[in-house]
Amino acid sequence: MHKGTVISVSKSSSHSFSKHSSASITLLKGIGVDGDAHAGVTVKHRSRVAQNPHQPNLRQVHLIHQELFYDLQDRYHIEPGELGENITTSGIDLLSLPTDTLLHIGDSAIIQVTGLRNPCQQINDFQSGLMQAVLDHDEQGNLIRKAGIMGIVLEGGTVQNGDRIIAELPSLPHRPLEKV
Image 1 (cartoon, one colour):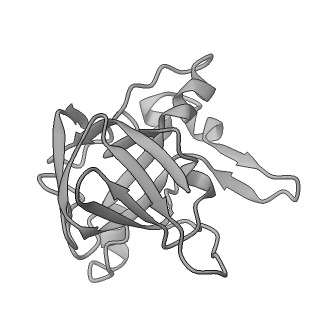
Image 2 (cartoon, one colour):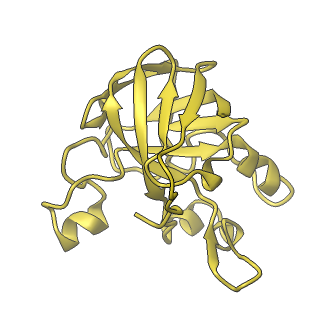
């Protein structure tokens, strides 16, 4: 069983790159983070809205592992929420989870993992060179995206710092995470 902890929660009512840390956030079933610009049944990310505003929002909640910040600390200073994530985690390898993993957070919230965040140019605008730092390649030359995962809210609830995270893996065969 995969377990972790919520380190920080963040949201922003505007489409700014970074989000503001909060004491807690409220997840709304089928919508996302209450008061966040990316909440909604249909896609809210501006580039995706331009392509097709009617596509389902598979990016209602963005999670990043705090361990990424540690890996980058010799070149970059990053605080929770600054890369646009809603939930900063610790102790759970988010990137290794398969698609459709259920993340049980706090007393009642459940997020279904939909895929990997695909970092865009805004990450370089935040700190020059950061985009390359959150991308890597495996032994076969396949691109590895390290900028977190995305999910949809299956069950709402309040999420706050210190909440436990328990990952419930889907039935086999597992599907690896792909960009969403």
